Image (cartoon, rainbow, N blue to C red; front, side, top):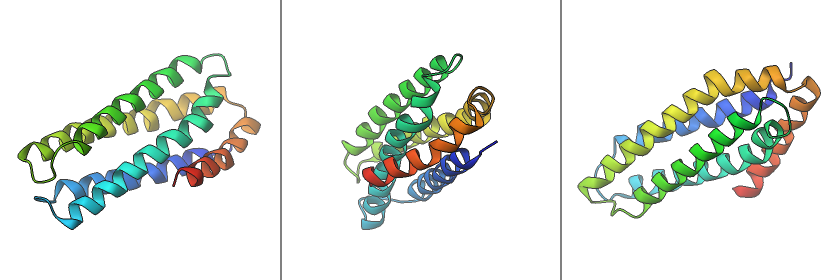
Length: 146
């Protein structure tokens, strides 16, 4: 089984978890908070777009993959909306960390669901040949979004 796509996705997931943890430790409107948030926003947006163009596009073409792909893409939309809510809140506002916490909870849910359910299902229903093509598609789409 070609696991390169799943390894690439997990690597991004670890980056997202790290950025969320580091952001939760920030206070007030500081350059560090602004920089980490910009990195997180870029990371989440580029990852979601590349994942949709690779793994989820592939899952949409095979029996048993459409429902999980649609669910995950819907979660990407939810995360995008939550990201916008944080983005629209003043960095110095007491509400900022609360909105970040909500985003963080939903991101962690999504990542855990992907890693413990989606990847296993994709591993079963996609052929090894199909899986082997996905990592380059993901990496190229990711680079185009950066």
